[in-house]
Amino acid sequence: MMMKKYKMEKDLGIGTEVGYSRNVEIAKKSPALAAMNRKFRMIHVLSTLHEFVPIWLAMHSWYLSSKLDL
Image 1 (tube, rainbow, N blue to C red):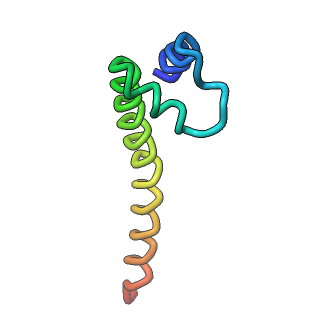
Image 2 (image 1 turned 60 degrees about the horizontal axis):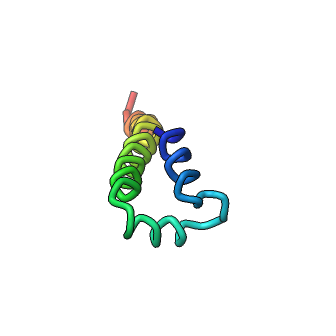
Image 3 (image 1 turned 60 degrees about the vertical axis):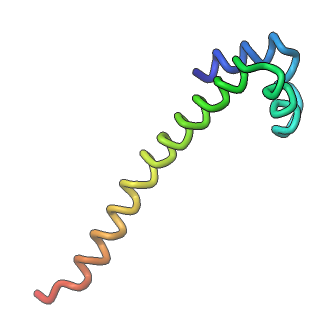
């Protein structure tokens, strides 16, 4: 996915500058880039949740186990 997005940005002449503002301007004109950005954002959010949920579960389990009276 990331390589497809990189290739599309390269074909449109963007992606080498720092920041997101240029991408937003071009995405308003290019529906293909706008769709690619939406899909990339969705995958990025799911990936981030995939990383944070196990950490949260471990912390919550540790908290609950500290409340046990053995």
